Length: 134
Image (tube, rainbow, N blue to C red; front, top):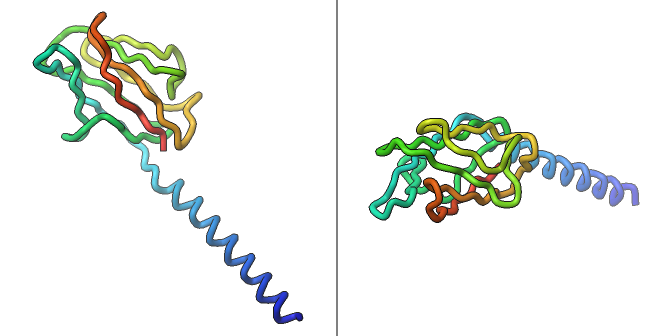
């Protein structure tokens, strides 16, 4: 009986260590930094987004990261409006200052949650990508 209880105790310790190592790995995977999403009017006048020469439909960020939307090819104002809450402090709808709009992820941001938002020029219909906080 002592051998079986010793094996059971060892199995519990190993399982706990394995679970804790998964948690620490998931925390290490989120490498912070700054994220620049390029905004450019497409042929129809709608905002077209790109991120690191690829799609900006879903951009993964960490708490504490800076996210910037930078307008190229035009000098008009654009707006970003987060639906159902934003992953940063302050108003969920923001207008650009010149050709740049910048936020820092934090405050109400929750890990492993997506934040849908719309981006548009003036009163035009919005394009709706997503920010995911890892």
